[in-house]
Image (tube, rainbow over all chains, first blue to last red; front, side):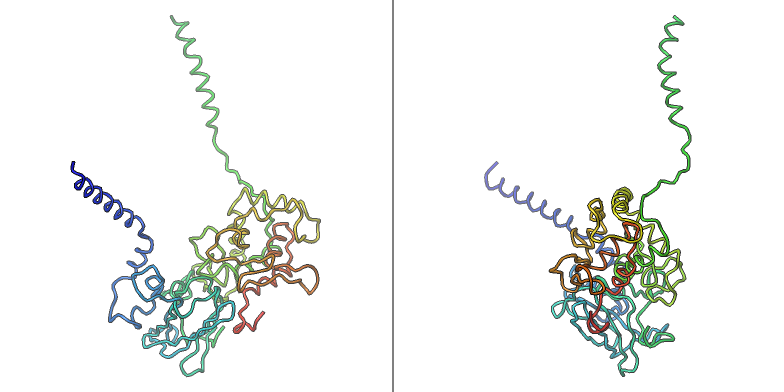
Length: 173
Length: 216
């Protein structure tokens, strides 16, 4: 075999091995989490996918380019699906550093990873746009920046349900 | 010929009899773990601390975790109970479930640690720091909390300064005695079978958020 041909074959083999190696590095669990979110409905951007765990895609493992440290969705009235627009979310980490993002038209809020990375645990409150109602989160957050990882759309033994500004029968508990 | 056949079958007969003897029915038996005995008085303060510190829904308040913590601040045992609200307090069944989860996490190690720790204390109160026969650090959950082993939740207990940001620096309990982390005192004295309830109550106040909780 001529030296140039041998070099070409060796390159092909090395390339194929590298491709297999790349594939084996894919995180199947993460891929399944992304797939479980289903197709995106409506325009992409800050108002998309309300109520879903934002950091599944925006947590650094992709596929979204923008990375968030904390993100979620706030709804207006308990049991309803209307977004709480202009609500202020106070996030405080255990060292006392705070962020106060506001919710947009979809009720979504987010903090970019490049702007702030909390020292977990964190504590959170939500205040209505007019400042009259405030909800305190009873437990703290130990490590998950996606509100919807715990605050699923359906309430159950492992989820308190969505975050509402006007929770039934209380102004913070 | 019959004699030879008989002699050749004798070993098989013995083997069969031996095997038959080994197949005696297995009795239903409880496999014991030597752990701190369960009682509401001794474990509730520990469980309340664990529920607050570790049992949030994004950590050990998840059914899929090896170490599962149930309680009103996180995962509920009853399907219709409200999680993470404490409008319904932690139930006795949830305290017991958390106890079983913790004690059964590493049964053999738990037995070794408990026997060593319980034998090192007199009745009437736990000893901290523990006696020479008490080695709580053999338990994974202690090592993870102390930051001696990789833990996604990071180091939670600091027995000696310098401490990571947000983890309380050891201080005397009641402004007396040596500087300690009440979280460690709570867990170690429980492993000794003499839960320090005051330490557990202090531990339940951790973490403390400077703005929202008013500071340490």
